[in-house]
Length: 429
Picture 1: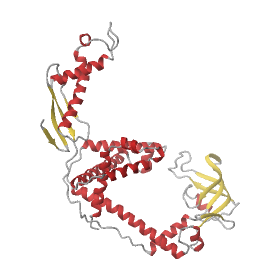
Picture 2: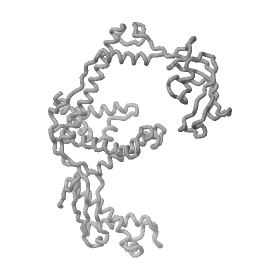
Picture 3: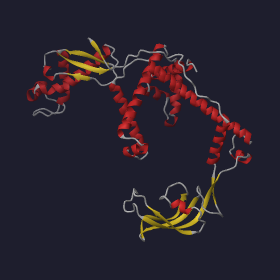
Picture 4: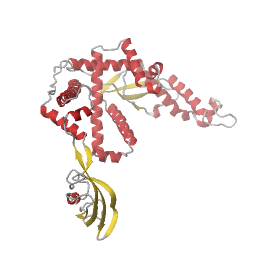
């Protein structure tokens, strides 16, 4: 069989079907179709072949016969010629050329695993980010921690200031008439958050607990409730309580309350924060290094991704994203709005990510192959044990894990990880 290589990692070939193979397909089709019909004088599925063909014609078997023959002969052609297909084939067959007692052929175009021409993947140059931590960074992180530990304290005396939380009742009216949603009791509002109508919060600044006041504002012209847009409203406001956010002081009492092992003084806490920030930067560098060398090795390789694979990967990612969205109780349009994307931008991002993911997988797997990387029996068993531990809550046994995941997949995963480690460890940092 002649296999023609096409652009885009596709191949084209022609498969010959003998009259004997087609007759076998007709035998199969008769067995299937005969079970579906009842012919007078015979129980369902028990009519002889000649009676069936006399009533319905042999052509009634062609569709099922052709489908059966195509599946069988296509599979044999792929296996016999070691064609590494990665998508469903496009089959070109002229039905008019199919006749009982005659040979026929059909043409196949199918996407195959791309041929990878590796470029440089060892000793790749990567400029790592600095991991030094400045005093300013330590101070900033400590201030963030202090803010996280801030408490809301009732302001017994004094007035509302920006940043305080006011607990109050309000009742709004337009032209003397109350409107839906314009009344609430014991409402909590952070002053200065901009949550209310422009000017509302500004007029509350300086009010005291139990004070009452009319707040006069104008609804914006683009207000969502069109009946109120652009209209002046009067809100009768009564303050019940004022809360202020109190940030703790950095002292030994605060440090001890954090209950960090071996950290009891302010200086020890500063050292602890510095070490945390440094460790964080080092972890970022590890991720950055790994991603950088994978990207560089992929860019240095030459290959063509089949469009069919990209489409399949996009579909898989799209289905995964939409299933996740449903779990959060959202619909797709709400998700797009939340992410600030159009559907076209969403699809473009998926395609970009699909190309990147597939390209990196192909290149790393090719590196593993070029380096002769595999897995020892001990490594394979350790990986299966890891899977059993991972699904311990579901009582997955070692035997079940081995049935579900073939050893070849485990070997590929281990070889892939080794290839990644190889290019990372050889990088010029």
